Amino acid sequence: MMDAFTRREGELYCEDVPVSELVARWGTPAYVYSRTALRTRLQDLSDAFGSHPHLIAYSVKANGNLAVLRTLADMGAGADIVSGGELYRARLAGIPAQRILFSGVGKTLPELAAALREGIYAFNVESEGELRSLSELAQAMGKTAPIAFRINPNIDTPTPHAYTRTGHAATKFGVPIHDAMRLYRIASELPGIAVRGIDMHLGSQILAIEPYHVALEQALEMVARLKEEGHELEFLDLGGGLGISYSGGEGIPADLLADSIVPSLRETGLRLILEPGRYIVGHAGILLTRVLYVKEGGGKRFVVTDAGMNDLLRPSHYAGYHAVEPILSRDREHARVDVVGPICETGDFLALDREIERVEPGELLAVMTAGAYGFSMSSTYNQRPRPVEILVDGDRAELVRRRETIQDLVAAELDLTPEEKQLGAHKGIL
Ligand SMILES: *Cc1c(COP(=O)(O)O)cnc(C)c1O
Image 1 (spheres, rainbow, N blue to C red):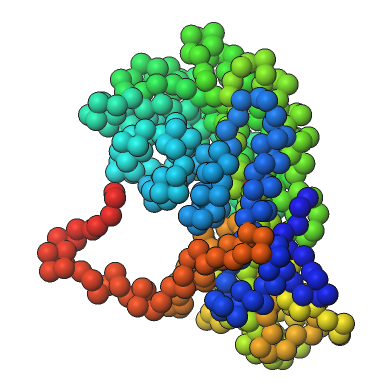
Image 2: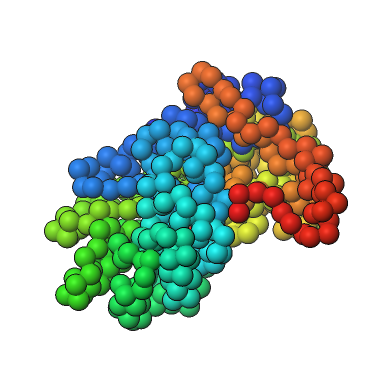
C-alpha cells in the first residue's frame, strides 16, 4: 500500500511537503489530504475488478470536500449520495449525473425532485412509501425514475461498532428480503418507474470478504427469480463498507474481494456498482492539532489539544481508534496519556490511555487515518469554527477550504430579510 504520510529524519511529511509548513501557513486544527493517495486507492480498487463492467460510486458522506470529489471525478468515479446537499456537491465537482446513485431511508420530496431533474443513474429505494412518492413525482414531472431496491439481507456483519452495522433486519435500512419480490412486482407496474437494479449495503468498516460473498449469493438468487418473472436487471450494487486498518495493517484485500465476486457476477452480465467511502479516503487524510496544555489529575496525564470531538467525532461517537503522533518524533521518554479536546463534555477525546512520546505544550500532533468521516462529521459545537482543509499533491499544497469564521457561524441568524422573518422561507437549491 502506498503511504502518503512518511517520516524523514523524524519529521512527518505529506507526500513531499513537511506538515509543519502547512501549519505555519494555515494554522490548526487542519485536515490534510494527499491527492496521490486518493488517486492510488481509487485506481487500485478499480484495477482489482479489471475488465468486468463496474462503477465506483464514491460515498460522498465519507468526505465531501469539492477538491476531493474533483480528484475522484477526474478519474471516472461516480458518487453515492444520501441527500440533496450531496447531490449539489457532487454535481458542482463535475460528477456526471449518470454516475450518481441516491441512497438513504429518508429522501424528501424536494430531494427526489432535484435528483429527477438532474437525471441520476439510479435511486436506491428503501421503502414502499418512497417508491410510491417517487412514482407520483416522476409522473408529475414527466420523467422516469430508474430504481433499485436496497435489500436488507439480514446478515449481521461483524463491524467494530453496532452503530456501523446496517445489514441486519432490525436496522432501519432497506426493504426486508422476504418482501422484495412483491415490491419489484409493484414497481414494474407503477408509472414513472423503471426497474434497473438491486442494491445492498452491509455496514461500514468490514474487514472480511465472507459477508460480501453471502450478500452476493442472496442478490444473485433474487436476480434469477426476478428474471423468471420477466424483470431484466442492469446492475447489482454491493454497497460500500470496505474496511481499512487504523493501526498500520492492510485492511480488506480488494483483489481477493474481486476474485470472490467477479466470476459469479460475470455469468449474469450485470454491471457491478460499489459505494466505498472510507476505503478511498481514510488513509489519504490526517488531522493536525496543537497541544495547548499538559496536566495531571486523578492519576492521569491529559494532553489538551486545540482539536476536539467537534472536529473529529469518531473516537467519541463509536470508539474509533486513531493513532496520535507528534509531527516531530524524537528519541525521548513515553508517557501514558488521554488526548482530550477543549469541548465541555467528558466524552471529548481523540485518544484514551495511549502510550505516546512525552509531548510538551505548543507541540504539533497528527491524528492519523482521519480522511474518512473526519471533516464530514465535524460540527461547530461550542461555537468553534471547523478546521481548514488542505490538499497536497507532490511538493505543492493548496488550501481547499478556508477556516470558518465566527461571523460565518452567526450569519444565518443575522442575514434574514424582513420577508423571510415572516414567512420562514429559505434560500438554496432545494
Ligand atoms: C455510508 C455508506 C456507504 C459508505 O460506507 P463506507 O464504510 O465509507 O465505505 C456506502 N453506501 C451507503 C448506502 C452508505 O450509507
